[in-house]
Image (cartoon, rainbow, N blue to C red; front, side, top):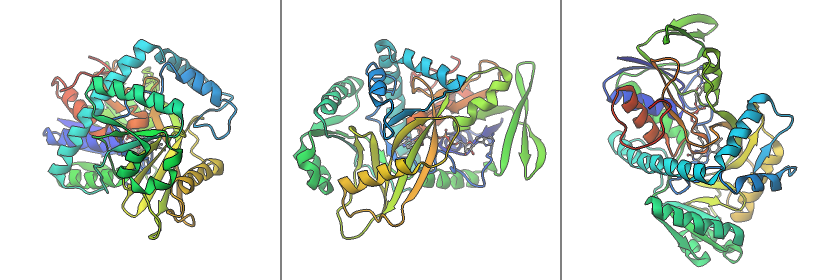
Length: 418
Ligand SMILES: Cc1cc2nc3c(=O)[nH]c(=O)nc-3n(C[C@H](O)[C@H](O)[C@H](O)COP(=O)(O)OP(=O)(O)OC[C@H]3O[C@@H](n4cnc5c(N)ncnc54)[C@H](O)[C@@H]3O)c2cc1C
């Protein structure tokens, strides 16, 4: 069977790998000149299995209210808002109900744990290198309120079978000695023991190379403009390449276009519940003479993550709902720089940071959209991975490949069409 995948980010390229491994002829089309140049380019680097709690949870409305009007708030809902944002916001509020949060947390946890297993197997099978570290993710609590929330999360993780350990400040420093100077400010920590970190862009670029070696075709600089359809089936994908219009045909089609996925499906009446949520990262070269972390970190008080990628430190965070705008706000960048300087003074070379902003393709529930279209029979989705696209990539793609082939997925997660 010939399968055309739209999008060469984490979701598209991992899907290409598993579909090719299942014996299909696979083509991947992307509007950029190379893989992973959009949201998968410079994310926080965490494979964060120990963070299945969705943004939408019973505490979220109050937290968001407290942040309203604060320019440096970790989550910013910019006004005026267009209809899509308001609609998404209302769906988000519904997902904050305790029963829904529990169900979403369980689904994300199952997919995250499965993804961790799939990623390890994929790494062994392909021998690809992307500065991966398997030292866990260390969640840091600088306030008692956050620590109590961490303890509650730890209990949830135990019931879900995800290994984690609560830590005293001294134990945090024993695991990550470069935190020594903030030990007195720490209330405690939690180690997600199965968590990992690594450079998602490098992973996708290397995996795309392996895909190519096994026969996957990549069409870059190819913008998909329309999904042509008739009688409930996709008939072709209309594209533009170097100014020239063309049509691509396959037996089955997969949309893995990140935040842009809903723009492709809206014309044929399928509303994917995905909204672009902007986030920032700063990548610093590390100085030789100051202690820098080797364990991936999450500052739960300030909602900032940091991952060691070879000789660099990637610091990422913030969430802004402001449409498809990807301009870089200097205030947001300064906040990341200040954080790095506060936690690891002198470690980062502040002279040459690389600042970046990307759009997380976020569903109100944080559960991604994987499975078959409800409208067009030969169309499938692997999209909407939001804050956890790197964490969930391998398991989502493997699940998608199972669905495309008509196999029952190995884990129980909600599919777009069961
Ligand atoms: C600041 C930040 C930090 C993050 N940190 C983490 C983290 O630590 N851990 C984690 O698990 N996740 C993290 N994420 C989330 C993760 O990066 C995303 O979920 C993931 O990259 C989404 O991958 P994707 O393939 O769906 O989208 P993308 O990487 O955006 O790929 C979509 C592709 O589709 C292509 N495309 C779109 N429209 C068209 C079209 N019409 N025609 C042709 N091509 C098209 C684009 O060119 C693009 O290459 C973070 C995100 C951000 C922004």
